[in-house]
Length: 225
Image (cartoon, rainbow, N blue to C red; front, side, top):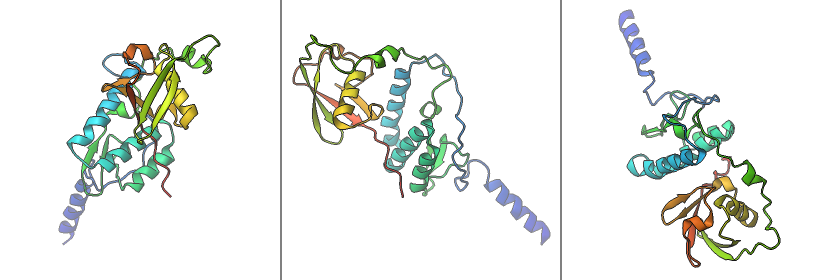
């Protein structure tokens, strides 16, 4: 009888090995360190992430779980681990290793997030956005802001911004923030299917007067009670 008990115990032990979806560890606070094959800019990292989040849910798994994982990944990267953990718990997502690299939903479906969605590479190239953010948001006298720009938010609302062609998307995001209270980091601007980076100037998009820019809003969900 004792031997049978022992082999049962070792069997139970082998079941709790890493790939078992039953195990759950709290999300670890330390950042995963990795190096990309070539130094990438913040813009390249962002479009790589957007590409993953746009395509992954189409292949497998449940959309609401992907949405929760995306929100948790953003929260964790912003060092808001409590929010990230609350999002995971709220969606009944388990982490066998305490990282978002491998996750399971309550039905046992497996979700894997690439490391580039979890933390920036150690060889990230910092773009020179310092001088841009120092620009006064108010137009200087004498500058004609003569481009009536229409943006359509993913919430279904249309907003008009007063822009001029040399404006960068980063500046326009800040203007939309002032008008609508939408954080610039939640905004993703698309024109004819292309993601516009913060450094893109309006004139570079070849936009015409009555064209509409799509703005996808990735707003973190409110904390679950």
